Image (tube, rainbow, N blue to C red; front, side, top):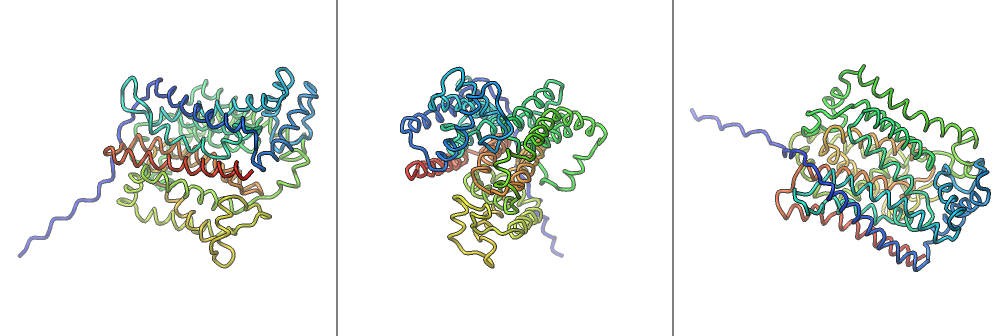
Length: 475
């Protein structure tokens, strides 16, 4: 009787590499590189002086007049109604410059660019820590730099850095909150820092109160454990959720401390709501009222676009999922289809669905005149990219980044405007932070794989800069 063939061994997923520490030199080099790129792009735009139409409208009709009014009334500024839909922190900071230094527009623009310098400096240091180069006193963190470049190249980040727009001041605060949550520190000093940063963030842009939920989750998670660096189970899997619910009493006590730290930010927001009798100054309440159910599908679609360029980084964790949990990946893809079908995703500027990707979607076929084929396909790709990103991270990063995506999407869904300008910067920051971690945990097998990982985000940065160039040329 013939012997049965031996059973083939089960597929073995890629093994994460042990964490590697970054030198201060690498962090400083990455930060200075990102800042230098921004300055090199900003100086010609300042010298040319021509602004894109959308930027000119926002600066000259809203933010600059708000700054000038605050400067003229200083220090008795009236915050009951002014020409910005945001809380006034950014405008008050520049009003102080206008009052005590110079009220020339170029001076205010240069002062406003410091918020972008702070954003990029913090991002550079964080990226070098998450994707440190090989040991050596002169090692260059190429991956950290490459993954962060799309953030600078985004027209929404670059225009806010060059002209008087408050967006980057808020993104700086959002990044700081995310890094505190990702750090794993839950001591008193970290708690105090989190409360201060969150309050300043809400003082600049009130809708970022969603980051308080990320802090509460971070304190619920507590300090990192050895199991956190094991190859991640898919987010929301039974095993991952059960692990999250162990020792609920201790976790709840820690989370309660984070809630207490967030109370000053909540109280500040409540004070503005009482002052304005709404979530924005009165003159914007009729314009921004209502939500937009297409936002979750649009967030996934944008992740699908970026995921194409970061695919070489995400391939290793995606391979592990395909080998060990293909049905789980299929289930997430099906969920993306349902999300994309749940709300209209055709181009409709009157319904808040306008902008570059919406324009492209409007030129392609639809399903039943209601669902964009492009948004549907990209949403599925975005879900795959997101699941691969999260599974490639360690356990703590996975939950924090997932909470950031969910909280941000919920906050944006409450706005009637599903515009790329409000969404793209956060997604590029999350992709950079997450891919840096994946790159460090799954070290490239050789120069070929390393080059592929770097070329993707560099190509994305080039595309985004090309779009920025077209916007400037067209005016």
